[in-house]
Image 1 (tube, helix red, strand yellow):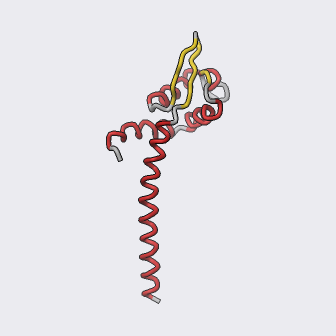
Image 2 (image 1 turned 135 degrees about the horizontal axis):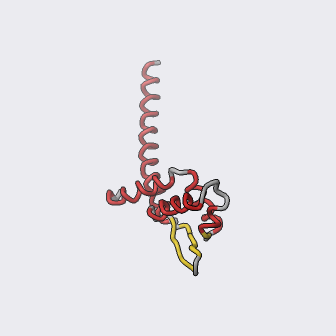
Image 3 (image 1 turned 180 degrees about the vertical axis):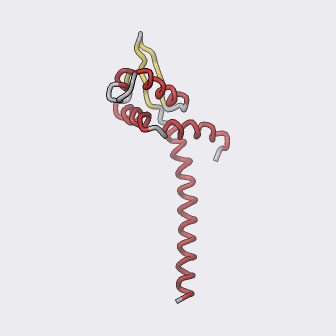
Length: 114
């Protein structure tokens, strides 16, 4: 694993920790692109609160923003999610192998005690 990516991973996981931000990402995964107002509409919070959530997602690299006149359009950037998924997969494999070895050891120990 690349140790320099840990700062990026911290921002990604921090951004994903909030259910409102996850809801925004989920919506963008379906709709592909939306304005700030469109993203704020189903959420039970003020537009400034939604904007703060969007800034957290942008700092984590999870959103791309473009301007068209007075409107800002946001789009999901899946690259950081892929990086986080790869990190999780690496440790999932490690723990899975470790737990398999523990299970083998316990079964052998149990058989030896019978």
